[in-house]
Amino acid sequence: MSDSFSDLCERSIGIGAREQVLLLRAGDVPYVGASVNVAGQERLNFGSCSYLGLEVRDELKQGVIAAVQKYGTQFPFAKPQLECALYGELESALERMTGGRVVIASSATLTHVAAIPALISTRDAVVMDRLAHASLYTATTLLKSVPVHIVPHNRMQVLAEKVAELSKTHERVWYIMDGVYSMSGDFAPIEAVAKLLAEFPKLHVYADDAHCTSWLGKHGRGFTLQELPDKQRVVVTLSLNKAFSAGGAALVFHSEELRSRTRYAGAALMFSGPMQPPMLGAAVASAKLHLTDEFARLQVKLLERIGVVHALAARHGVKLATSDKTPIAFIPCGPDRAMYALFHALARRGFFVAPAVFPAVPQDRAGLRLTVSLHNSAEDTERLMAVLGEELHAIPEIVEHQKQYEVIGATAPQRPVAHKA
Image (cartoon, rainbow, N blue to C red; front, side, top):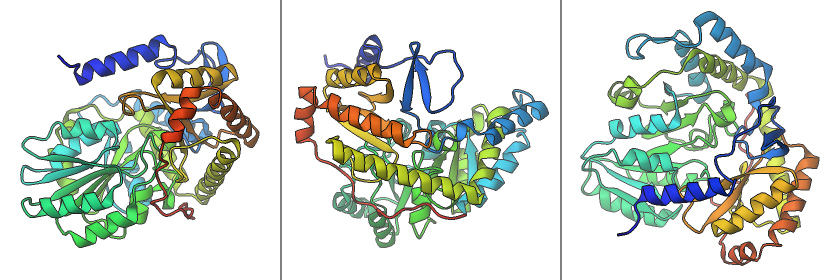
């Protein structure tokens, strides 16, 4: 009998833990952002998803303190019955950020689990990009009697043909995608998506923009909301974690009908616990920062650092999974054991990067996810890329795997997409 998905996950994560690559625990020392303590060793931090470094800013810390002092550590009421006052303040700020109508949830995964079954009916069909986030796959398993079709990553001709076919027999066709793909780091081909929305009136888009919230778009509204001209049939999830540096998530709609349906029919939203005052306070403070002129300058600064990483990768012979300029620089390694070897080589030289194995990536397609943030100095970045060039070329399995690896990306606008407030 073949192994189940759960068996494969247990084996993959279990081996990673035994190899001291996964399920590590940070040391009990102050966290400053530029470095992280792992197993008693201070390592330069190139594994953070807080791309703008907001989690250590005083504005957010003070937002937490003020919220706890005013509302306590939790607001102990069922969310459908009574919400903390900070929900209204956060919702208003997020709507200014995004130009849409907002529903707040306590995590991005919970958002998908609530919204996808509420939005998609038995008269609809779903098409999903093969590299869409694992939490989106989890949410689609909750759909009853709805066909779910997986299409090759960013293959827009295949997608167009499938949408045309399904439009003949279904009321709506939902395309589920990431704005920036969390492992490969490439953009969705947004101009092609816009053309499909114009061509097929039954097409709707559900986009997970968790990894492009904050660092992209006007006021940090992300890639999809910034680049799609017509958003009436588009639903976007933004993470209030990661670069936003608080907690929770926001669903953004430009249709009041879809917003109301999700808010009232999304069972996981109605019956799960709310965001609690500490993270609501941090989120309100972060949202206010997003609306300032300073925030646009932070975005531009990060875009410059991303460009430097790609230039250094080319100089030192470090092959990245995509040519798209995002904060996610994925280094394909191939077999898990090859990735383990590179991870430990970098650790010995004082660097922390994020390992990726199944189920985050396909089997035997392991890699290291190097993330770029404003915590990283130019000197530390130069050192890392030089060390990477040395260490990965010392591991024959990685060299051989990278010869066969096809770089993806270059499908999205390559101009800077940060905007002045």
